[in-house]
Image 1 (cartoon, rainbow, N blue to C red):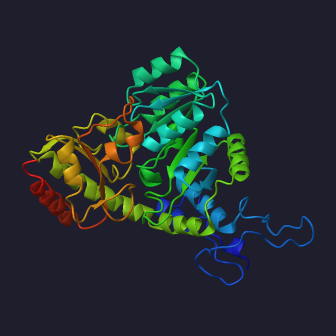
Image 2 (image 1 turned 135 degrees about the horizontal axis):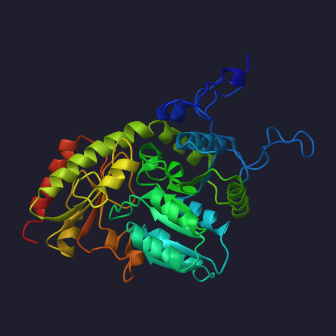
Image 3 (image 1 turned 60 degrees about the horizontal axis):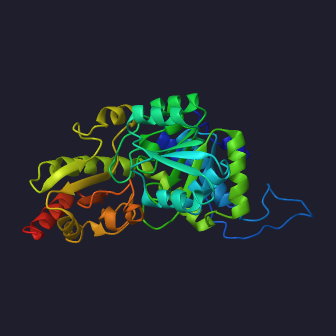
Length: 396
């Protein structure tokens, strides 16, 4: 009996089942259960143009990358997924393949600094217009969309680093009415907690470096979508520009996806407890976490996120910037480092680190803000670490 005849029907399977089995057929030659790492740049042809299963050159196609693409698309419930060498490469190719000089992008006023840097320093000089709006304010978004024409509305929800929540369905409805496409950077939520395509988004972008990879050992990105024409444009530029992950990076993302649901639920549980604890601290000015009922976007998050609110928590300290920097450097279990979404807990000062590129703009983040990527360690240990860090900076 062939492998195809033994393939499970995953049409109605649970997310965890799809994550483990979609695109993961045992190797037909050896029966290896885990997808091999096809560390090859090129493939033997059986005569000129006689490609074996369509493989010719690994910039264009690679079996390990194909397995990850199929796996991610299945988890997202999408027709297509394309893997990239980084999250920013994914954003760049998606937009460059489908936008022209003279068109415009509407961007949220709280997004990853690298996204703003790419759009403002690369796309704007290329002739693409860029406007910024509070994406959590539907009236402001509607007014912007009705005032001029946009090719794309770029949404992060939850946003980075203030954890703002955008109503994807409502935003997509308004955007489509005016002819704009909606892209959702779903990195913070992951495909476990949120499915933007089901809410009306046209495409989803990921930094797979974060929760999808999940172990701080890979840099990657992905675009997920249902539209075949847009998929073909993205795939063409992906190949033409060569913005692809290595087979080993693809394999690491495959491994990460298989445990994604387990990890994200633990991240979310820990983050909720940390956020609730921080909210009671006298040193804290404000806690940004959509799981808290005090969060302005809590009701929307509760409706469009399923199974948790993610592992990211941001906190503003009453004592200001100096205290925030000292606090970020005083933890022992939380590691002072950029990035997020790994099994280990990280802490950073966004204004001086991940979001330094937006200093002096309308996207500048509060100087007293500290961002936590809450890992999957014992939550009591994490809280104890934050407690000793507060004690260490007392008097600053």
